[in-house]
Amino acid sequence: MNDKADALYVGWAGADLTPPSPVLISGQFHARVSEGVKDPLTATVMALESVRQGRAPERSVMVSCDLVCIPDNLRDGVRRHLRQRLPELDPMSVVLNATHSHTAPEVRADDTNDCIPQRFGIDLETLGVMHPGEYAALAAERIAEAIVRAWASREPAGIGFALAHATVAYNRRICFYNGETRMYGGMSTEQFSHVEGGAETGVNLLCVWNRQKKLTGVVVNLACPSQVSESEFQISADYWHEARQELRKRLGENLFILPQVSAAGDVTPPRVSTVPDWKALQRMWQLKGIDERRAIALAVAEAVAPVVEIAAREIDWNPIATHRIESVPLPLRHLSESDLREALAEAEKAEAQYNTLRQALEANPRQRQEPRWYVNITQAYRRMAWNRQVADRYQQQQRNPRQPAEVHVVRLGDVAFATNPFEYYQDFGLQIKARSPAVQTFVVQLAGPGTYLPTQRAAAGKSYGAVPASTPIGPEGGRALVDWTVQTLESLWKQP
Image (cartoon, rainbow, N blue to C red; front, side, top):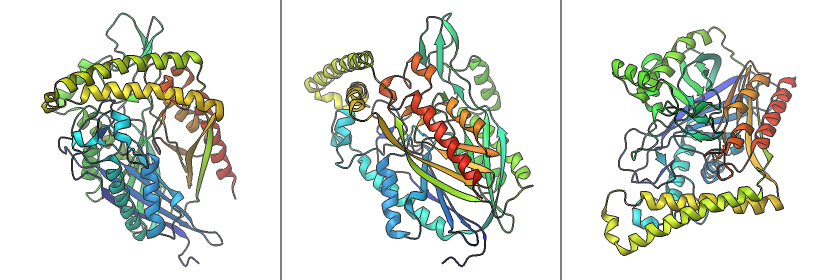
């Protein structure tokens, strides 16, 4: 029996996810061994409990992590800890999302802990790094500890929300007059025709105040993955490190900041290949004395800080709260024999390259003493394995043409949160927002393993992020998830 007064209770906590020793960095085809820490990785937890007379308490926990994705082994590890340490909380009500940092540790590991030879084609001992399974276990324990602390710190609170705008991302799929589409295709050619899609500028903001009207934390949701520093060999939270610093400078040094990436599977921070006035943009950064990460951080802070005061004009101290979790069966991307042949042909090319590099390494073991000797051979192996798995999915679609996806939908007053486990193309996020009954809808991607989910036009254009090897779930699944999300939101808004 809950003896609390009717109210919304919110608790915050953070965890340090910075690895204590060298790790494999996730986010590229080739392996990268971390060569130091540029800035720390964090997890931020917001624990919510809504108490209303005559109803069972509604409970939700949102966790944002400076990682490239949230694989099942990490999610399940957090929930196992919570079943023991926090039995009053249903662990299924905990949803984790990644900021998509490409300079964070690899966390994908299967139960047998043998994923490295399968993924990179070389043994782990050769690289001298912490095993991804070991790091994932450490991260799961630290995240669970933070959830326990956030839950214990719950206090009566109110929420406010606001919408701002910042131009921090661009569509990265470039189309050409010959009908070809390429990710990062480049615009400085006479064959450049157009950009496949747009780039959403909305910044969704949820603010939380305690009863003394002190701002305790903010959720910042925008369609821009954390991959400015995506090719570096140092651990980093990417632009969110600078964004947190700037927001705390403006809003309070102890403020909790929970970042979320909205639907952004086809966009990226500015690149020479995606911004037509790239030279002018670089010149402005130089004149201001800032780099790209700092520029994004300032854009986010300048969008968020002024609207916090506006959000405070309407604080809801006891919002309706509902959390719906479901495993939604989505149709697999249908693979034709032509898709299979193309993928296997690419796999053969990569295999030939891998074998050549492996033979050269065996003939000259001293290559292993060279800096980053493993980059080319691991990239070739990954591309080979990446294309070969299309054959497994081709067989799978004959047995079971659907794949489940864990999805969370949360109502919090007039605000909705709708998660998905994918790198979800922007069009789908816009469809959810446009049809949602909520006043403001936060679409949250990468609340799961993070494979791409492209639109029909992207699948037709092919290229990385839209070819069969990139996309277990295809455009039909993307639309099915939109429909399920909107229908579920409508049902939550119809409840008395």
